[in-house]
Length: 96
Image (cartoon, rainbow, N blue to C red; front, side):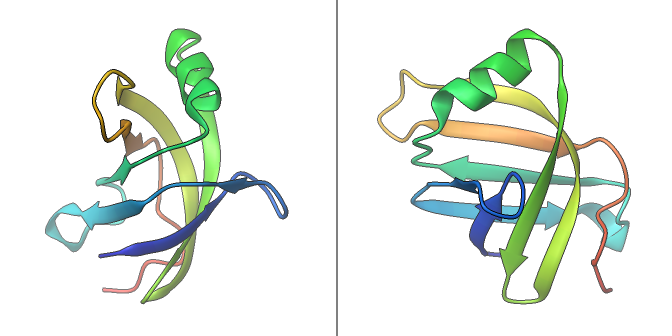
């Protein structure tokens, strides 16, 4: 599903071009997001380097969802600045 906005907290917003949230087999324990055109590269680079889990809030066409993520991939060299994050727990707010 398309992601409209991503927040780190109540006020801190991730700036990006497009993003997709995928829930595998309708299981809110198995999900990932691919974010294109990310401007907040440093945040994701530090999380990847430190193997740090982060809490993200996603606004989508199906409502607001949130969960802990692990940064799985980061491609700052690509023209699209692609970041892939996987769920490190339940995707709260997901409705089947």
